[in-house]
Image (cartoon, rainbow, N blue to C red; front, side):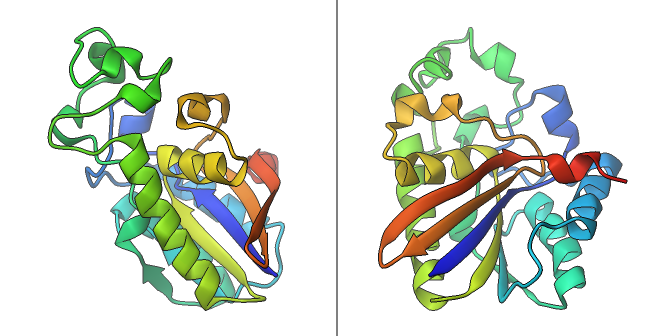
Amino acid sequence: MTRIFLIRHGETEWNTSGILQGNSDIALTAEGIRQAHLLADHAPFQHVDAIYSSDLIRAVDTAKILAEKFNLPVKLERGLRETNFGDCEGVPLNVLLVREIGGFEHFFTRPDKVNPPNGETFLQCQARVLNALDEIVADHENQNVVIVSHGAAIRLMLCAALSMPIRKMWAIAQFNMALNILRFDEGNSTVELMNSTAHLHLN
């Protein structure tokens, strides 16, 4: 059995401003750093064998804070990056919703129809992140692994684990610094926890 502690990165300025980040390399805010320390201090897991992160700085810096607690290196995995929103990155989402560019008018109602110019679809992102996840699970049989990734990317992993279509991905909440737990037994996945932020409310 392999257990994956799947974590969304801490808060960034673009998160608070509602700006689409995607593959743009945006740093954590002071609050995002504080959130990562809260999870490190109150992690509901005592033993970790490996820590993986998207190579984007907001995920890397989140993972480094966790890595200090468990005295482990952070292994960077490009496949865990957020969806590439191409030409639409750096634009407020509320602006994109009314521009009818790349299907963004359907962003929340039919995300399976979104196709950003010079970016990737959610289906393409899902294939990428699931490939990275499968490789990590295969390399860490019977171990506990932390993965730090991104909001949409994590939703797409959870959709696959729950056999949910991509068009329903926004039915899964995923707050900054949320913890999800996936268990893998002989190729079968079980979702044990989703979108937990209990650690953010402890002193």
